[in-house]
Length: 205
Image (cartoon, rainbow, N blue to C red; front, side, top):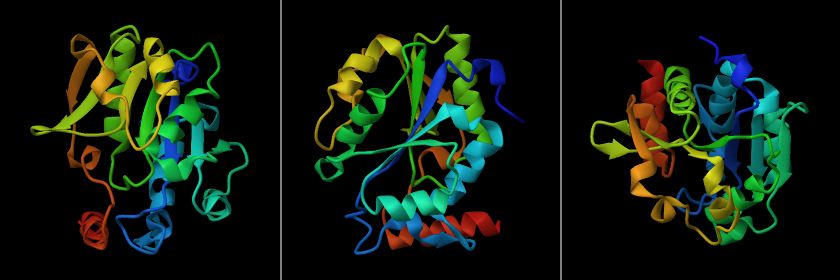
């Protein structure tokens, strides 16, 4: 199932691939392999199967050249976050500054989510569009809220002002939040070697 291409100029997919993987260890987790494929490619292959390259924007930082070489697609816009060492907020801010004025929402996608399903990505986007691109969409698996999150344009100023290792969750109006039931891939990211081994099992099943 492909995402509706008529909506491609409404929602930018902001892929956060700048972190230095401090919790993972001495290696960059995004270049570790699952099923003979780097984690970053596990996600990118799914995104490219449902979205046009024009819908994607990647923010890099740590080992920028390695990440770009792995993605190996010059049609995808990529920016380098000079302040990536200061935390995730700086990468979100850097990405928001690059958005065209016609964009009505941004889907913020951590790059370390290799088992997220295309079905859930489309489901989240469809809900955002159904609500006239005006609500904040969170995925939820059982009782746990996960990623990616979609935020409407009215939050762009807040996102652009983010600093340090913090997102915008505390600044979101609770009446704007809509949760969508999804599968486990929306709450599963790779922070440790143990997470990586669990992800490998998902691919085997």
